[in-house]
Amino acid sequence: MTTQQDPTRRDFVKAAGTVTAAGAANAFAAPAVQKVRAANDQVAFAVIGTGARGSYLLRHLVDPLAKINNGRCVAVCDTYGPNLQNGVKTVGTNPKAYKTHEELLNDKEIEAVVIATPLYQHFPVTRDALLAGKHVFCEKSLVFTPREIHALRALSNERPKQILQVGLQRRYSKFYQAAKQMVAKGLIGNVTHMTGQWHRNTFANDPWNKPVPKDRTDRETNWRKYRDLSGGLTAELGSHQVDIADWMFGATPEFVMGVGELNFIKDGRNIFDNIQLIYRYPKGQKCIYTSITTNRHLSLFGGVRTEFGETIMGTEGSIEITVGTDNDPAIALWYNEPKPATATPATAVKKEETVAGATMASVGKGGRGFPILLAPDQMRGDESFLEKELKFARRWLYAKGVMLPEEDRNPVDVEMESFFDCCRTGKRPLADMEIGLADASMVILSNLAMDEGRRVYFNEMDKMGRDNGSKQTS
Image 1 (cartoon, rainbow, N blue to C red):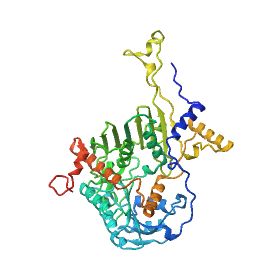
Image 2: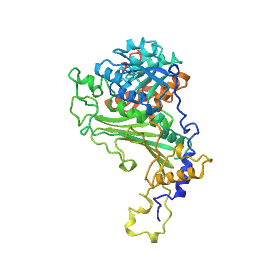
Image 3: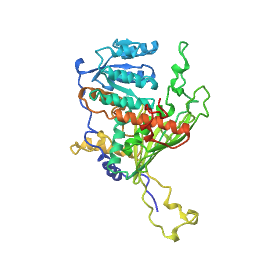
Image 4: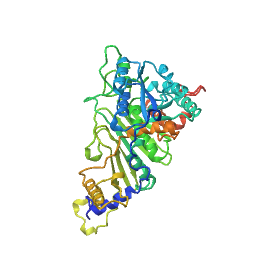
């Protein structure tokens, strides 16, 4: 028996059409023609926290190529002078500069705030911003403690007209949206498992161990290393990817169990430097997550990318997927589950093909992944001859691995534009408050499971952080 490894043009076009069918028209519509907006039609926003992450967001927010024209930055805030001045310089239009968020929130011109402070400050700044009547975009994790989960839910629900969005940008990626629609339409069968990893080699480059300025402490500069300030690998990295499992499974976990240790990095940190977690969902689905700091290899996409990616596995197929960066495009590949091998007459089975009574002819052979297609490569039905042939040509090149489809916009740009749109229209964000709180709960409970070496149930959060004498009331 032979297995065809390389799809023909006809096979690829047929499969691509199936994938394309997963996309709803509004999910893959061509981007609207950009128009210049009047200043009063733009959301006047401020960025609170202009360190590494805040500066990254600012660069996207003010970059003309990002085409985010429904918001304008009028102010920045940071308690550390060099960060504040860097924020002002990045905006480039002489925004107002504030040293405290309380001072900034008194500014009546500001309609919305983007919060990119260290994690332990997320809740107090978000709370104060909501109380000041501002719309809020807050980076993940949305909150740090169980008490803050209950308090923020109550506060936000009291202010339904104020937008609260969390920074989980994969939900704004067209590739991830396509994957979700494929799952919903059953194109990879019954989805039973997902794996995710975010591996780094901190011995080559450690982004959490930056040089400490003379006027700062290591705790101020590298706060992610310390448990009382940070959720560690689970919060900073895993929160993105386990959120994808929640999205694909359409549920939150029942329980989590795992192992986390500090074994290899001896620099004064007290967070784990490697974690392995297993999440069990209501229908028996499992998510397996791993984050290590000693090697960045990614065994997906033929090894062409490193560090992070996910695999969504169903009874009829799998999806390998990873979000793009500023330097590398997103990738999404769809694999059909290999069909059962055609029965081979016993007389035709060679002796060396038999292992413990089973024939090797029936296992071990896979197939090439099909790229998931986005709007530019879909067939509308009204293409000119030349346009149609160009689409066929691109699809053929995709099938051969010569090139891959790319998203037309960075999901970070899309999520920020969407936030400002929600501020104006009142629409519910794709990554709303409840999604953010579910993600924060996952971080808290996962770290608890590793600390206590037990299976932690997600309904334990109902009693945590309440004034009822139970443990974990912080």
